[in-house]
Amino acid sequence: MERRERLRQAMDARGVDGVVASSPDNVVYSATFTVPSHMSNRFRRTLCLTPREGRPALVVVNVEESLARAQAGDMELLTYNEFTHDPVTLLADLITERGLADGRLAVELDHLPAADYLRLAAALPRAELVPAADLFFEARRIKTSREVAAIRELAALASRAHGEAFARVRPGMTERDLARLLVDACAGTDYCRPIVGSGPRSAHPNAAPTDRPIAPGDVIRVDLIAGRAWFHSDVARTAVVGQPTAEQTHIWDALVDAYRRVQERLRPGVRTADLHRLYLAALAGRGLEASLTFLGHGLGLTIHEEPYINAYSDGVLEAGMVLCLEPMYLVPGQMGFHIEDEFLITDEGFELLSPGTPNAQLIQVGG
Image 1 (cartoon, helix red, strand yellow):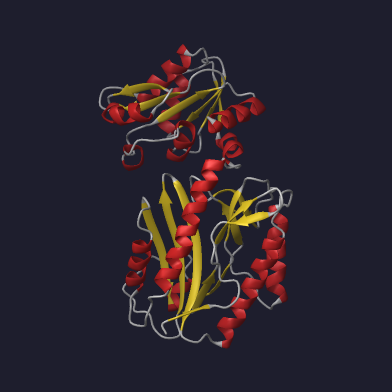
Image 2 (tube, helix red, strand yellow):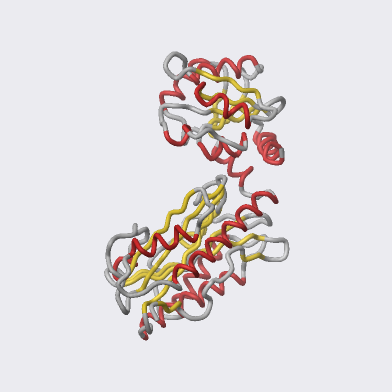
């Protein structure tokens, strides 16, 4: 109900009579659930209409009807045969029945297939169809208490998984071996996707684990993404096998210093562009030039969402936002360093959701 109220407040602010969700994450936000085939079959549509006034409705393929009815609550449910009916026509008929055919409707133009949009526009010639992306951002940027609790639990789990897996790393293990340790430590989640790069491969921003053996002196960079009930963790840690070199220690200390300086500024009212400039200046003060212009992002039903903290965005932090800060420094062909934690912006400042962040020394493994 709280999500529905947020959507309606966003509609009021934009003079919109209804909003149509078509992407899996925004259907989940609007309806609190989605059906499995929405993710796995691109030819099936799940469409959710939330009017500014009245009962929300969900259009879903008939083979998912029993599951949808079990989860739909007070929503109106309309089903279609994917071989004989057009879900977009069903949606247009629903909009007409609700008296919205002459209204202003927000639609996910950044997701809905062009063919679907053309059919919807033809079926509703008097309706004004406007983009829904900013409306959903407005509704989703401040998390509900239940959303924060779900993210907090996953963040703590991911942080523990890093510690458990790194404690078992030994030279000769492969990246895949380490990935399996991480997956085992994330038991109970709906999915777990570890990014694991060792040695020169740690300089790849999104390295899938391979059969490369981990060797003494390697930097190991792990970014662990795990999810449950549509919420996610996104936590990264870096380790070195054995004693770190002077260069590795210098880079890590500079990265941690910049990270701390940014954390000290986390509070409502701070602009994301100022955080990014502070980060670049802190690195420069230690003799490093940032290898990426990306510092952080919002987290929720998707891994990356607004607000972004980079060279191209300038949002304002608000209490209730959940952010990932992920300073990363890459030396192409040699090594890469990465810290990532999750933060809840509070009225007083912030709460660290992923405990165990390595704010002092570079993690040493393989002893």
